Length: 367
Image 1 (cartoon, rainbow, N blue to C red):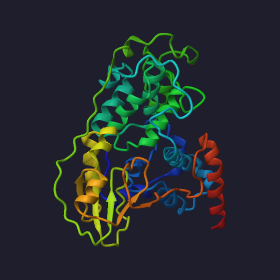
Image 2 (cartoon, one colour; image 1 turned 90 degrees about the vertical axis):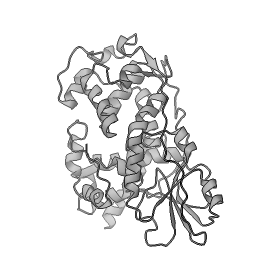
Image 3 (cartoon, rainbow, N blue to C red; image 1 turned 135 degrees about the vertical axis):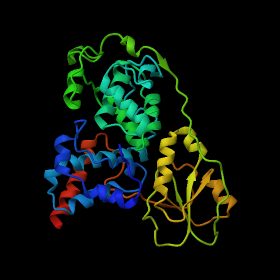
Image 4 (cartoon, rainbow, N blue to C red; image 1 turned 30 degrees about the horizontal axis):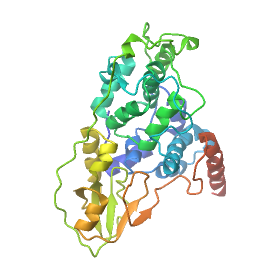
């Protein structure tokens, strides 16, 4: 799995998107997915930039609706994160929970379902997992293993280069029925179909009417309370000018074009309390640092927002809005949304999509 970090190469990846083929094949393990999610999650590019680039090539909206919807799902989850604490159930308590941990077989990639085990190993090595594999894994953990969704979602987020608080939490809740009216299941036949495998005899080799099994399969009974910790660099002194504006970057904002032509202090803020609440792997930290190289004169500060402000007597503080920006004070700027008008809470994606799609159609007609 290759994730280049130079901004020019990321833009090239956007240009290479085939949105029609994406819609036709995205559910398959070898489908024409974009591999752009790590850059969107880290705020290097936006869903709006991706969509505008694709639409500029002249595709009618109805021809690439599947592609547009997937970008819109991401914005929908972000909007949910603005109004809800996604560490709590969004709609319903997860039913049939028997533990608050995670199956050890999942941690060790030893579930016995070969394609899931390989996907977990790839997650550890490369920080990526195909979206369908995430759904299969989440369904196995929550709906078959009857683990509560929160700790397993943190485990997956910890390793994902595209780890996104809102998308991750909402997706796990959707799978286990906490953000939808039913649980998601996939049996081995379904997995074989979309992953080009032919495995039989697994805990999921059952007809759908037999899912979930009445008892937790022996492969998923033993569980663990994981200890996830982020390794941050040691604090170092930075150079700053208190008479200039300060542009504060963080794990969710590494946009190299943000205030690019303005003179100012450019600080990548690594708040230990943030990473204690939302730990990520060394792979993720290193990926963040590599992406940060696209931002000229970016310096790293390990500490809280208030510590940065007070230690260096900084006054003109700018930052992009995010629900996890605790303690940020100054000029809050919006993220780059597909729509700035469709905001707030919608009980379903389709209620959100109805309004967003209407806006997108109107814009395309006006052009």
